[in-house]
Length: 117
Image 1 (cartoon, rainbow, N blue to C red):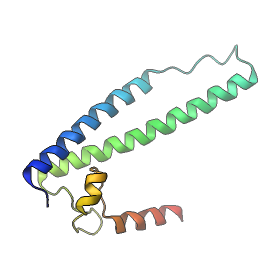
Image 2: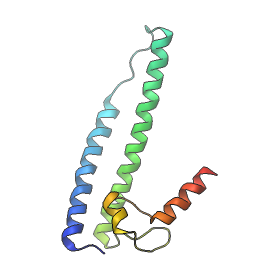
Image 3: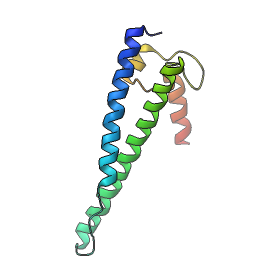
Image 4: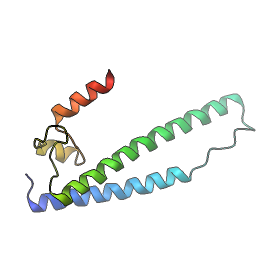
């Protein structure tokens, strides 16, 4: 379990990252797809590729954002660091590396294996 000061630092770090993600997501949502009408085929392919990459990054950032919101909520209700799958304590080492982790390493690996099926 975390000391009060450690939990306050984790919360502060999560809030900073949340703000960074909000700014990045806002910036990405304001970007416009360039007009492909006057582009040659190579430029059009590049535009489509860049748009797909931007969408992928936006999805990744949004998933991280949702995880941060969940971690902040868990801090508020007092169950931060508890695995949502098995109910066991997530290792301090894992939470220090990934403060918005919602599962212990064993459950996370199991979930990732199931996703690959």
